Amino acid sequence: MNLDPNNSSELALLTEKVRDIAIEGGTFLGEERKNFRRERVEEKNSHDYVSYVDKESERRLVAQLSALLPEAGFIAEEGSGQLSTEEYCWVIDPLDGTTNFIHDNAPYCVSIALRNRNEILLGVVYEVCRSECFWTYKDAPSYLNEEEIRVSDISSINDAFIELGLPYNFNAYKPMADYLIHSLYGKVGGTRIQGAAAAELCYIAAGRFEARIEAFLGPWDIAAGSLILMNAGGKVTDFSNSDSFYSGREVLASNGKLHQDLLNIIQQFHP
Image 1 (cartoon, rainbow, N blue to C red):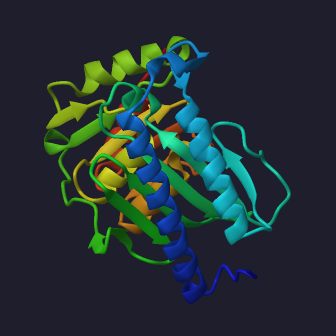
Image 2: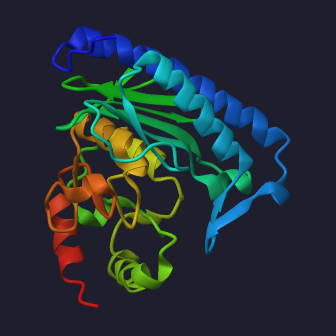
């Protein structure tokens, strides 16, 4: 199809088709979990796992999305495609929350975003364990299934429910993680570590949490969820308050109302 990124009707139609693909992919994950064999898990890096399910899920997504928009390239966690010169690029995580999946623990999800050279055009995240499809497209509201969602109105750090991520690059991030736990634990409304960045960004969009902090992610972890969050009224930056978060290297996501408070905490860290 000849996609016009400024045509809302075209983006809405494309997003609907991507939703179907994401839900089908999530259904595959759910069925595979019923008979999952842990002996077929591989270790990519220390404590960073990949399974035959990740690889098969990615193969299916690439095939379906290629048929939908043949001119688009891919950036995907398990290696399909790379940064390229195509006008459009799918950014996908076939199984975000692999460690959760392996241990039969929620959440885990499928994440699909489409971007051009300038911006993310649509985002869909299907969280398997709760059968929840979060979605949006450029200049549109964000939705959970068919209901529009918005970030919370919490503006006091004392009441904030905050998600922390612990990336696999633990040697580089452990001092920062220790600092954040020390700075937030007992001083905010609550902290959680859930292990699936794409789903957790959507939880902030739906008002379940107020913020999430992590570094050393990949673009596939945050592409779809960041657009869903921002279109729901939230804010996403790196730790210096710029938009380089798209790489995933540093990601502060919030309901917007607490963003500066959290930036102030982060920027006081000195390793």
